[in-house]
Image (cartoon, rainbow, N blue to C red; front, side, top):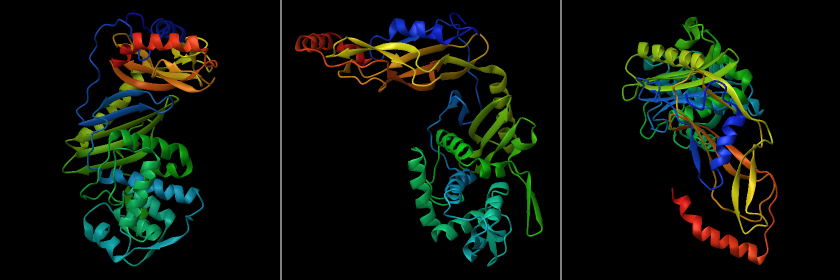
Amino acid sequence: MSGFRRQLSGAALGALLLATAQLGGASVAAAADEAPAMETKAEEALLVDGETGTILLQKNPDKPFPPASLAKMMTMEVVFEAVDGGKLALDTEFPISVHAWRTGGAPSGTSTMFADVKSSVSVENLIRGAIVHSANDACIALAEGMAGSEEDFAATMNRRAAELGLTGSHFVNPTGLPADGQHVTVRDLVTLARHIRTAHPELYKIYAQPDFKWNNIFQRNRNPLLKMDIGADGMETGYTEASGYALLGVTSRNGRITYLALSGLATSKDRSEEARRLLDWSDESFAIRHLYTKGAVVGSAGVFGGETGSVSLVAPEDISALLPREEGERLSARIRYDGPLAAPVEKGAEVASLDVMVDGEPVLTEPLAAGSAVAAGSFSDRAMGAVSELAFGWIRQF
């Protein structure tokens, strides 16, 4: 690609940004040969690098769809939070109610751990049943045991979802069984998966358990990625007639963590094959690029009414991105801020954002901080700033 080849460095990217970032919302794109983006037959898809948060592929990431068993990820987050927070013990036993048994147990014809009606099962075994077997009876028993009812537990799920920033999802029950108003997005699912894996690492390991036997019934883990030898270590699958086959998969290989959410596949075979194809493409086609070290100057921003008319913008932390290995992709970068900034400006305040884009789509956004303080200027400085603002304010309309 012209201007951005394998030797892409923070200095090269920074030089381009410095040339164009003096005005709020300015952007720069490297000249590049057109190259088709990777396509997917999934209706919704999101592929994200776990270390940097770089988006490698996205398709309808914010389009809602029925979650099916993917809703169990939110159920497990609520349970994990209670266990790791000391509010719930793994050896606590919850009863299998008639409702849990009929709705999610042996008579239901759905995914189940075959827990006996009116038996008691430990929280630990219910977790294993919910994860390995995608068991509806286990999820209902956990919900009833923790909150008294599925409805009250769903309220907790939605409260936690809001706290985690899952803005496009709403839960009605802990199982994902069809219910009006229940929906998720692939963006929210990836956000949720990253949180669970990092915040609850020990409990997360259960997602890699290959099988689980309960009530003398042996069942294998339903995640098809676990047997593919691609470094998969979780998480969940789902299916509804309305949205087709779905999956949230996590892999750890070659020193990289990757998250993939898919929905809208026609068959389980399509789901497995598409997931593997995209994960292999991610592993083969991208590499980590360290763009800026902490404190490095990335660009500058205009300042209104200050002792100086601009302030440097620095990286508050190291900035890295997972970028294409090969030529032929379009790469661009931009600094965004609402500007000119109004003086006074405090050193270290986050006042702008750096966007790195591939094929015109933002794949990574990182904050930028003021590199120095800018005090309010004299009356004449502020008057001059006001004139400049009037003259150049139109730029921010783009």
